[in-house]
Image 1 (cartoon, protein in one colour):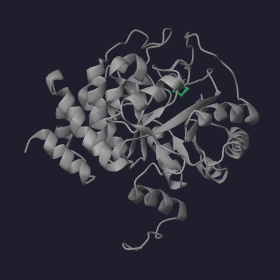
Image 2 (image 1 turned 60 degrees about the vertical axis):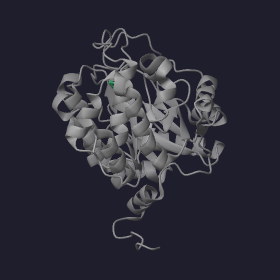
Image 3 (image 1 turned 120 degrees about the vertical axis):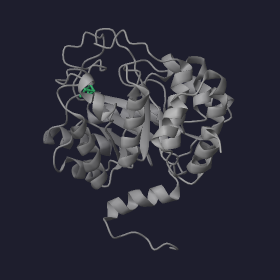
Length: 353
Ligand code: SF4
């Protein structure tokens, strides 16, 4: 059986490829690209149909971070020309979130720069979560505040957060090349804490930082091992004034192969087009919708995204539909896993319930 037929069969059964098969996807030629997209697209449609979930990012605190992540415009000593500000007020955040929800976003991602929140920050954010939820009925809230300390994930869950994002970014083997102020295991631990507290775990990667195919496969399998519900795939935005400011290593074709590999390894998880999609996928962005089932709408973080209207037009033109507020994103079996985590171990439903 050829590679793509094997991968489609496995994806339809929710089985991961082998490491060698994932590497082979990254090694396919441009002549095979449309076949790769079509194959991964079958897996995407099996679990998510033609739906596209929209997410909207609200940056609560920007810049002024003491950590030294090389890819980040908010790092210690960054000379990138970004806005720097401390915590938006709950009402300001809710007002910003309203714009995204009005544009069709189902999930609002509240993001703050920094190593991790203090307990006081978590209380401040609890008010913000309440304000966002009360002003936007049915909206999901994902929190993204860095490394968590004991008890903070539980507090965020109590405050109404649905999910927690903390990206692994790159492989364990190369993590030390992109950051020296915390390590890979710190990130894994935070994803585990969020998951244990009943928050839906969202964790992804950044491609284009000079990593090898093996590194990409390693991080994508590490995310599978953590059983994350959502995998944001970022493509490096080389910000001037950061150490990776000159790194332009991706082509649109490579970005698509990376997304296809992520889809094969995470057949039934939300694969999200995140930072850098416009500058790296460029005119091939609509093809990426056959692989990812989710994207950030419009502007995100410290870079300019496409206008929300352009995204909505692209989705419609490519024959996809925006996922409505009343439709669940994840397949039933995966939602049940999230519910069991919230109820606690031993509360699984019997097989035919
Ligand atoms: S911890 Fe977060 S905000 Fe700080 S430098 Fe790293 S990625 Fe940027």
